[in-house]
Image (cartoon, one colour):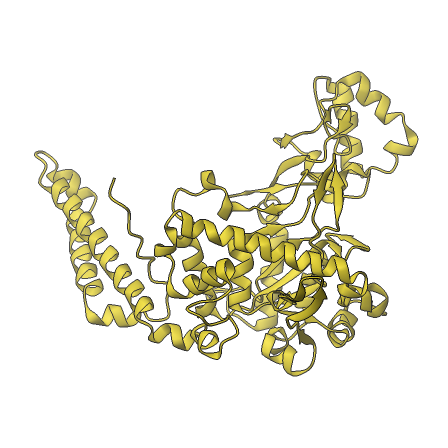
Length: 468
């Protein structure tokens, strides 16, 4: 994939999104929901001084060329008109930066080689320092008489242990987007047309991979932090700047919790006319503290507390009612999503850890135990998974599938060699050598040693297809 799907929301402001203006001024651009502009209108736009003069040079040159050559063109700051209003859904495919500017990529790699003293003959690897999900939040709202429930309970950065993290992953809950009219559970996992297999396969694989790699379940907030602070994507854009200035140990949840830079959010009770009511705030996991802001955001800002204040760190201070409603909204959406796995029977394809998560989401417990039970928490560790029978079954499944694949390859090679009149072609293609290599590989993957080598890998999800 050498093109990236982009949604340039800020391009409507002339001169603001410089990258989009440069991209859309180029050739062979694929765009959607931009206004088709003819020569006469493009000329009018170029004569609007307060508009034209603040555009970047690439877009100015593009507009001049469009006026000269005629035909239908676009301007980055002019989205399509729909129902009398400018659409909030402009899109385009951006050529990947490393493809568009190979020299920049080369110089970046060369600089890394020199800094690390890596010989030209050795590979220069760029390990992933963190996997940080993004979440869109919104305050309570109303559109065309339809109430939009609040989802603004997260502060700028949260950390969730795997049980709570996968409750979010299963639900894929999102706040109201500027380009939509509603909010709720969405994402690729909840849209069947994007995936022909059960969502349990993706969730199983993701859960195993996170246990194996040890990546922390961090997430950043977009849209709103609490009902009063609109941040759009500002926090999301800051995260790489903060994370790249943190040492490897500082990026671990253990370190941050130990040093008081992450605080745990606990369940709490409130009085209602019906009696005591539990607010499951623990679903939010951990959140950053003022110490985190001072220590790590201070490496980016001179006065980090001015950028992220106490009300943003503790959204409940903005409105306790909105905070409680947001958590209930989240828990209700999680319950609704999880119940679908029981209704359609796909719960049977979930690995044991995912089954625990789905049961707690749907019914609040697993075999009478809460998600906070030490026995339950102990299962969500790398060591416990490696010892489990279900993980070993994944490795056996992987070995079996590799064996079947190689046997199929061997048969195809043998059939090719046995075709009448194909002897010379088989010799030219080295089919005999390929067949020998395939037999050796089959012997390797069929051995017990290969099964041992697979320990610590993803293995394969033992998907079982129902008979038609």
